[in-house]
Each structure stands twice: as C-alpha cells, then as structure tokens.
Length: 89
Image (cartoon, rainbow, N blue to C red; front, side, top):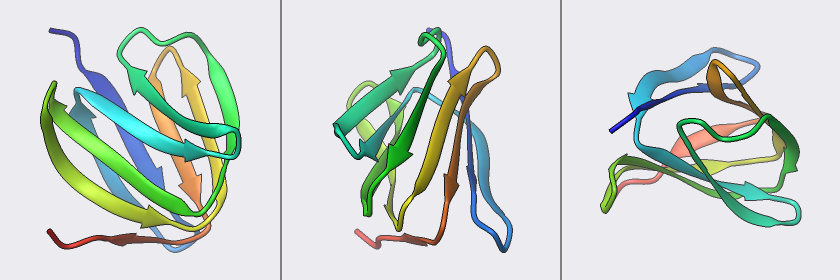
C-alpha cells in the first residue's frame, strides 16, 4: 500500500509532516479525500475538521482548521491553514 506524504503548516510552525494513508480535507466546495497518487489539485479550504487516516479505516488525528489552502502535487499533500487545533477523542 502506497503512502501519502502530508504536511500541515500554520503561520506559526509546521504542525505535522508524516506519511499517512489518506487525508480528508474540508474544501469550500465540500470535503475531499486525498490518497497517494492523487492528481495535482489546489483548493481553498473552509473552517472545519480535517481527518488524517493511518490506515483504510483508522483515523489517527482529527484537526480543526480555520481557512487556508490545500495543494496536492507529486510530492504529496500540503495544507496551509490560518490556524489549526487538534481535536481530542
């Protein structure tokens, strides 16, 4: 199973940089999932919950993001969020 390189960045710091299975991002046009090999893509994100999956059915992190941008390229997914706070289970 291929992994996706994911980075979550705020103006203050790099919050996450890891290999994951999938990330579900709250886009302005609706949520979208990103897996390894996804086509290049850019989107504005809305305030909402970003979910990080370490496996097909395993959510490893839930993060409240406040606006920003998401970019998918050949290197992986980068989310540039205005603010981000991890949601405790």
